[in-house]
Image (cartoon, rainbow, N blue to C red; front, side, top):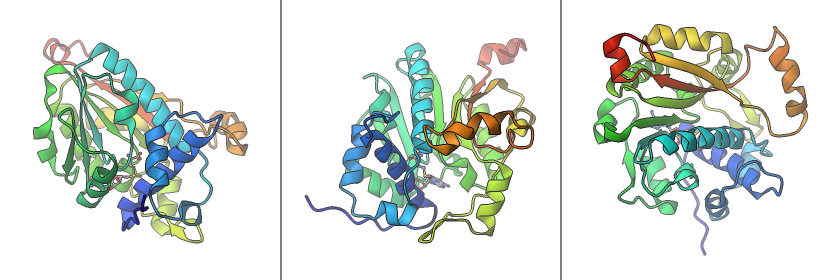
Amino acid sequence: MNRFVPDLAGVSETMLLALHNRAEEAKRPDGILTDPDSVRIYETIDYDFVHRFGISEGSLAVRAAETDQVLRHWLAAHPNGFVVSLGEGLETQVRRVDNGRMRWLSVDLPEAIRLRERYIPPTDRFRHLAANVLDPAWMDAVDPSSGVFIVAQGLFMYLEPEAVRRLFVDIAERFLGVEMVFDVIPRWFSRLTLWGLRRTPNYCLPPMPWGINSDEIEPTLRHWCPLLATVELLRYHMPRGLLHHFDPVFRLNPLFRNAVPNLVHVKTMCSEAVTSGTGS
Ligand SMILES: C[S@@+](CC[C@H](N)C(=O)[O-])C[C@H]1O[C@@H](n2cnc3c(N)ncnc32)[C@H](O)[C@@H]1O
């Protein structure tokens, strides 16, 4: 089979970085993610992943595996639910968590959806939308009748802070009872990317204007939107290596513990709680 040469740049190219991370992890005998679809796609793309992005350290595979767990739990309670994955790139989560009944909408920029559709054709239950997530028109494609879950892995950091606030509030207000999982980066890392952070000599990360420290997450989200029931920081640790061993040191040390990336799970109030003012 001819291997496909992708032509992506800027923020869209980051979908290849995330794929590299998940597929390399899925190929390991001791990997924390089972993802044959990622491996299949990875092996048919003609792109020098290691030259460009360096050796994969598995952190984005941890993000995917943790998000899968939350999604499976939610799908057990909402088997016909509607999942929207914003900025989905080449993520194959839809295949990993499918229960045969859920519906799924994948929203990404046109060049990203074009590449996605080479490998993951849309179906009646799994739909694709080429759109900017900042245009709320995508919300019209969501059927909220059996519950809505929003995933945004590796997306919010690429948006301006005010755009993240607007998007977050729009989602919470439009879909009462919605649950969301998204990851965030700390402020110091955001600042480095604005100066121009090289991941390898061959790859400079795109600017990531939205950074937020761990201790700011819950107060900020609650300030943005009073409709939140719970805000939980999920386990988001390196799977192995030096950073894995030093992780508890970072997380306990007051100098560092707020300056780590986080995976956030938010539940908003359902309509009954909003009407009765009970807040759950
Ligand atoms: C780091 S990749 C993450 C891809 C995927 N979520 C994953 O974890 O593999 C970021 C993705 O967000 C998409 N993206 C960035 N800004 C976007 C926007 N304003 N609207 C839609 N998609 C966007 C990019 O095209 C890219 O696919």
